Image (cartoon, rainbow, N blue to C red; front, side):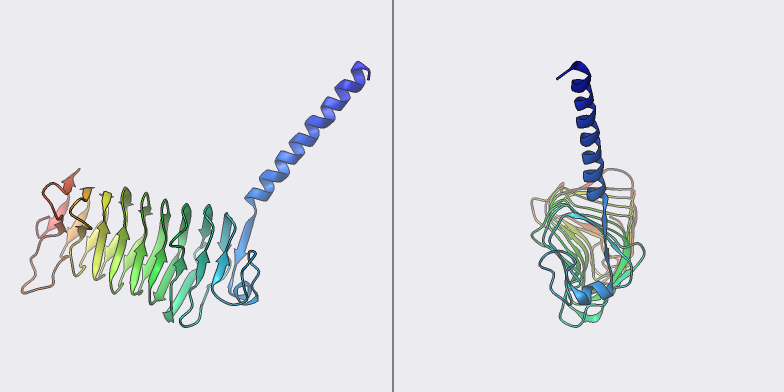
Length: 258
């Protein structure tokens, strides 16, 4: 092979490499649409049977293109693979007070749920495992709100009118910038930080430690009129099971006292 032929071969290999990388990147960036018609049809991912729940078995990015309405006693979306992002794009997942779970993924890690509305489920609107992110969601009128495990974040969401807890999280969780009001229970975590939230008029404590070993840093929150059950209300806004469990990081606006 001459030097010129060798150089041409190297150029061809470089071109093939660049094209291959571009195609792989394009494939990874592809979004899968989720809508009510696709839920009825099935086949969104391998193993997704016709009808609800929509079953996600592959990592990737999924985007709602319509509202979703699972029937009674059935969940909306079941996630069986990590590395999933669900972009609601403003659409709603509604259980209409009859369906089971909104988003069900209790054994799955590394999932992000964002930019939509989940309402009307008899079990948690969202139940997940470690390293989940819930951002810019409206979670309302469910029996339970959001149930996550460790390393999770709940950010800039509105969580209201849920019959039991709004947020229940494990260790090393981060809860920031949310409106959490008119639930039975507000924020329950094992450990982590609770920053810059508006937490008002929940029937029990605004922030409560899950166990005697909990350590929770909280700051810049507005905690008003929570824990009003019992004669006359006027009860404390936060609760830890041991001395030093609740650690103020910044001033909080509390009434009654934190």
